[in-house]
Image (cartoon, rainbow, N blue to C red):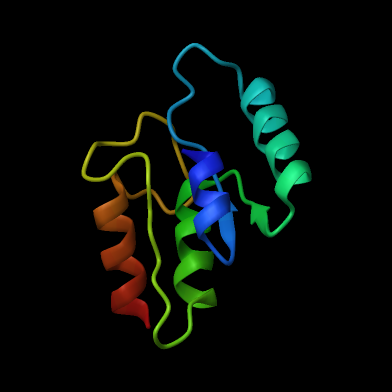
Amino acid sequence: MMDKSAKVSDYYILTLDDLNNSTMSEMEETLNEFHQNYGKGEVIYDRTKAIERAIEFAEDGDWVVITGKGHESYKEEFELGTSNDLETVKTFKRQS
């Protein structure tokens, strides 16, 4: 999914989904390694902050595509305290 995103996007923000059986350091290493290979985006580990950044960064006519979780509940704890991507987007859209 990261490969495809990098190829079709002008800019990407890599973030965490569920760790599943990986450690935080393994996931961070994977994201950083991928970013070093493509370098046309950024890495934000906190998923809710990554979504906030994408919404703030987008200009009129831009598309923001959030992949990974959809409506599924987060398994990790993030700064905003929302429970899924949809709730996170709605929170930031209300604030803007």
